[in-house]
Amino acid sequence: MPDTPEITDSHCHLDFPDFEGELDRIIANAAKAGVTRMVTICTRLEQEPAVRAIAEAHDPVFYAAATHPMSVAQTPMARTDQLVALARHPKFVGIGETGLDYHYTAESARAQQESLRIHIAAARETGLPLIIHSRDADDDMARILTEEHREGAFSCVMHCFSSGEALARRALDLGFYLSMSGIAAFPRSSELRAIFSRAPIDRILVETDAPYLAPPPHRGKRNEPAFTAHTAKVGAEVFGLDYADFAARTQENFDRLFTRAAAWQGKGAAPA
Image (cartoon, rainbow, N blue to C red; front, side):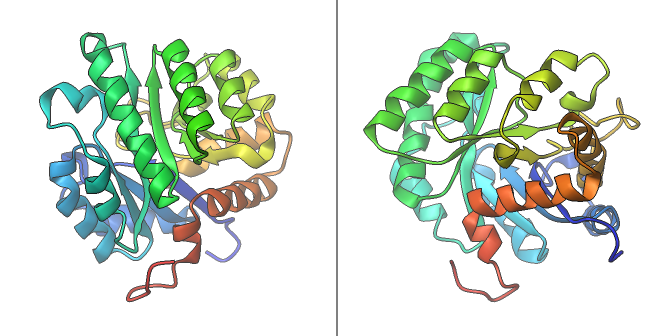
């Protein structure tokens, strides 16, 4: 649909069982909604081959990989050289999602912090953006990101941002990006929308985190990349822009952060 503004779902999980056997239809639905690119995220490194295969089979799909903080205690600790090796693939566009989750897995906090620092080192070495998951860990997250950034710069997006104002400000001060998920579109998320409204428009991305967190009018149902458009329409309202302008700004932001995806020329292209 040529008149539909193009946007990118910067974070989804297309390898999850929720989408089994449906990927062609899911990607076609996304295209109809103007979602012409998506980044599918590998949360356990042993699953990287399956996630990579999805990106290889579908031109609009890129991928990233890491050990999710909630998986750190159950899986071998990632190694920087392992992540750097994975990053050689031309459709591998980010290091993540990594981070800290003290809501469900606070007992592994120390291991999560070690894992996060390993992933930061990989982001620094590869030049690819770090993709951060943070839940109920604002103070430690702000501290580690600040400490590590002093040791050497790296780029980063705070995926599915739903933390407090202080962490948002620290991330923005470090030059990082905030990503709006369906949470930002929930009726009761007025405080979160206010945090986004005070951020520079050139640091905003949109995502689904599909199959989770479907925005209205699909809340409570399986999320999918096409629904990025619903969150982006709310984002346009938050920033006082029309939808086409907001979509264009988030596209520029995505391209600036995910440079390898921006440079992709189609199947068979060489790494950027």
